[in-house]
Length: 277
Image (cartoon, rainbow, N blue to C red; front, top):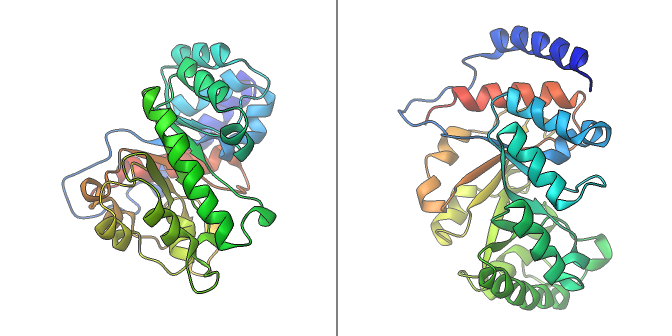
């Protein structure tokens, strides 16, 4: 994304903001003091130029980013890009092998960039077939959480929808919450997948207060499709009004398959900047 395209997109976004400004504004006096974005949303642009993409994100009003890969840049490069663009990166997504086989290096890289959270975002289908596998993950997560705590950061797990499908009558998400140490293992609640599974995020906040310092902010159309934030039916004001109960500190916009990554990021940012609760 070169400067000309960035300026073109910015001009286009200005027109979009006029159309969607004021959408999804809720009664209340509170607003988010900062918004973030999971850079997986912008992975096609990140592949082209990481620093330019971070600059574009900052230009949309995002203050925080969450990484999902460094695109052949060193941790020191990433840290320098963030400083230049005036962004922080409280968290990063890593792979299961990163916490299982190279945890010390993963923590060291995270410390260099300035992450506060290391997040496991996904399990492959063959890695989540039995309850015994999830029991093993709970044990692993506790150990990883202890190592992260000793390094001055935290470990968290990000859900999709499969964690809510019972295995032998037990929901894996319930198992993970019950069998991990609440001081060592936090959760990054994906609001879209949680609601699509028929669950109420606030019910989890009430049952497990303080366990959810991070969330993914995605919207859902009436037909269940993922859409840009502000174009769907999820009542984010209702959810965010319980932030203190949940322990929520970081709100990351994400769209798994955006038609236009920049426009998705722009529309979602505008919605959250106008959101009151």
